[in-house]
Length: 445
Image (cartoon, rainbow, N blue to C red):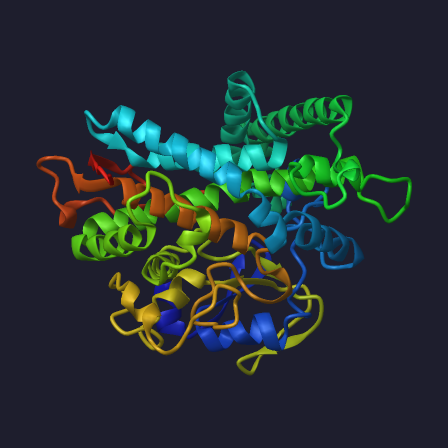
């Protein structure tokens, strides 16, 4: 997409089958889409996966723009992902960070699969936040289900969405069976979770603030007979959003950060110096301490600039005619914003292909919230990701923990410049190879 844009310009019209699709690849074009014409481009296209996996697109990310979307978005912002709610889960992140340290130390006598450990950390944090404390059997069941759902969502290209008369190919390829099984298994899993929460009588309505409870508790407390209330299917769809996007995008960002740091030893040393100086000689440090680490924040921002987990963001669909950089975009056109290309645009970034966190320490303070259109890893406008705060806090805790407690280096015989940086297509833009490192535990006494 970026190569095509370099030849044809930052606003391109492509056809995916019969579907007209505009791809924008510059900050100015992105601003036209997500600010100037935000309302016009605030809806989502119809997809068979949204319909079959997300209960008729009743989730936050994929639902059509309208009153229903406003309702579930409001629920997520006010009840699930507010700063107060995110802060309330700090003990969960602290406990899982301690487990991460223990897991690394257990594996430290041999090369450590950092990718797998990061994935386990983010998955366990999200599962506890969503469903509460679970036994090992429940965790294994959730992990297996997560793998199947992510495969169905991210590794799929339904032909029926682009050429309906070729829908039979989805059956022939096994995609229909894969999606149907993922949908059925997730629904059964959520019904089991609902029954456990309801039988335990720990629904959040018994808690004045609704804090200290998991997200299923909170959502079940909002079930009423009111026609404006969320349904059980809506709750399942919202949970599935977080169950997939919340884990995949966060662990992908953390993994890329560790990859870039190991390729840039001076940058890693600088980040470790800041973390260890601010945290002091404590075996454990509070989450609030991480918020006082500007260089670590710059590392996370630079990682997201070069490696946005959702490189084309979520597709939008125009609800009315609009103009983007002077081009007429008719109602019903699909819109893709190439955040990957925008983050590497040499017109916006000096040495755009280089990993340089220092660029985020200068006078211009780029924001995660989508206010700076040169830097939009979470999108912008009405359809920006509501889980920004949760993702950034989780990534910060994981990185600070790994860099505080351990020194890291590549296995013997592996050179940084020879590392495979190939990206793997799928739900999020992961690195194709796992990150295998050798670590040395630090003594902070």
